Length: 101
Image 1 (tube, rainbow, N blue to C red):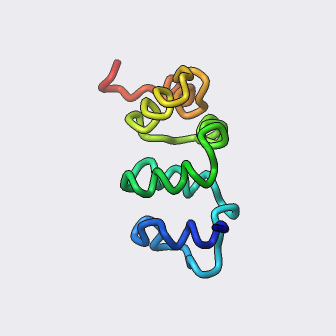
Image 2 (cartoon, rainbow, N blue to C red):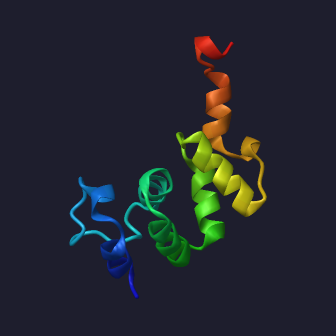
């Protein structure tokens, strides 16, 4: 199955702003992974993991500027990595909110 077929099998409401007939999974992998992690179903996650593989997902997540804390914990648990390796965690530590001080 190619990238367009995988994209068509994902939940359409996740990608309301993308023309699914024009794109494939290789156009913007970080955006696809982030939306599936934060808003997708378990079936969506399985499709993304089968297409990209856990190693590539982890490498792309390490470069993301933002990622939900629950999703970050999930990726760390699956991959055996620490939160400190992820850019989104380091940026959040530099910009603490006043009510968490």
